[in-house]
Image (tube, rainbow, N blue to C red):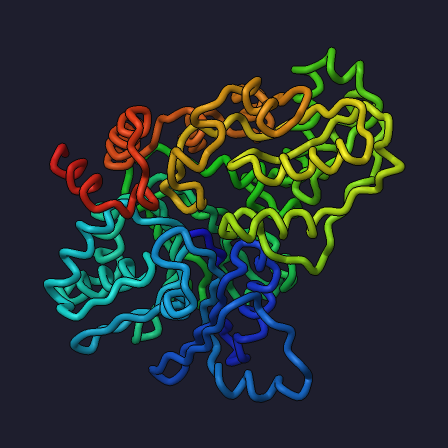
Length: 499
């Protein structure tokens, strides 16, 4: 599931809630559907969960929040669904953090990622928890941890088994009933998670993005490595590599779309990477850049790349496209019938600035093509002479299994159409994707350190590759996909039998 996680501990007995509240508010972009906070105090978990964005807290309500969430140790989460159902009851039941307990063992988990071998893990859990009700992948992680603890394992051994037996992406923060506090990543390190601390080293934190540290005035210490377990004591962080051999496969889509521009990965700010994306697009499409009059962005994730286009080409960045700040719904995660109206309302374009102009429009990515099609229709109505689309993320040809909600071939316009065909469908004069080589170079990562599965078809985990290959074959044969590929039991079970 697409989520943001945050966790913090204070060693001076100060309430932890303000830290996890602000750390999570800084990452609300990672999940608009639900949010939750959990603190630990005197051997008990204290939980608040709710739908929608994290709310502002009125001054009159502060003491009530502190009373409901006491303690110096806590975890938090924001979520949008990439597994499970999306009706209101399911969203409420799937809101994190989640807890699991049995025979005196209990854990609380905040999770970001996606489990692929869901049915295999559920089968094992049901043997220990006959009434297990699966609502989200965090439930799987929490219950699997409890099962391993029941086998008399210490938590490091329990985490190691989870890393070895659960396939997918998972960045996890966890608290046990004994007050043990730790974080870990899957062996491929697909989803982000970093660690930091206050200047006086009295407070330590984990965060999906560095902005969650920044907002609390914390210093980033490091990014958690693939297959690594990190615990915290008064002496600071203790790091242990539990699983070796997995190839690093950090999600490339974080750079193009998901992460905040002022976050950093491997000490490179996301906005700087996106600016370089824009420069690359000009270098790779010089004739179009020479024949254009202005460049505009699809705000806001297209803004930084647009600045790069402006710098490299010398074209004026006409700030004629603006996002309505308080229309916060993400078209990316809406139902089809809601998407068109929301996009149309969300982006405003000043017609006089584009009338009669040859316009380059910079977009972060094309998933379904809905957003760009609507924007281009607006530009045509407003008299744009030519519309060229510059896209920072290479053409998406396959689904994501690791926590981005593009889970079937059928919903991806790039899975069955070339750039030229997409241009005709969305009404552009040309669609220019950044090359994979240019994208990788701009990130500062090596190609073998990124998960580029959605643009190459090469997945970093084996079961996922089998499912993707099987479903691509069926899709090309005319099979109508029935939901997310990793939730279609017969496909997964068939792939598991091929192991």
